[in-house]
Image 1 (spheres, rainbow, N blue to C red):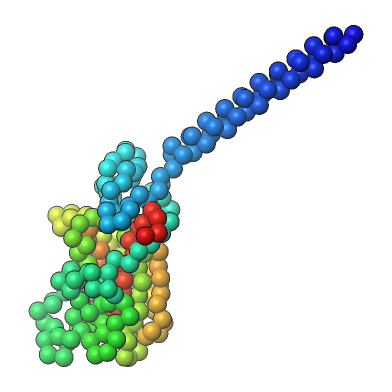
Image 2 (cartoon, rainbow, N blue to C red):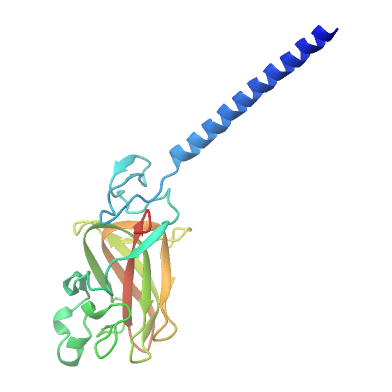
Length: 237
């Protein structure tokens, strides 16, 4: 009798171990499947485009996807300023329409002055024309993963952008593409409500592009902006 009980207990133990191993294997397979489908920003240091991702058409690629967004990454883990405020982004990288008309007083308020936290006379970009056809363009001198936009109004007057849209492209031979919202419409980003506060708009998913355009849709008194672009980083550096 005692021997039969031992046999039964041993059989139960073996079955339990088998179930545990099967469950563990299933959990591992589920984890591997999730990790295989997940992707994240992998743009360490000064090489923000050195990553492998699933592009907008579903194929694996090195570098930027053909549509410029990364569907499998809803947001970046870390962000780093591109260098508007620090001066790493040079004035010639920032442009606007009809730059040759920025003479006299306006020569102090050119596109290259659109730098976050800039102070004093000429502290912002002031559009010479106040209509919805204006834009501020940034050439990043190479494809970068852009994850956000910071904006402020003019430092010395009550002038700012209240809302704007964003366009991008990977090179100058392609058409401009609007950044879309979840419904497929051109996304409207809400801007400032005073001259000094910083408004942050994160891009989820981020943009992979060389050229970025900010297109004012609404403004207070005049189109005026100080700004910074954020670069996606996989870790805090």
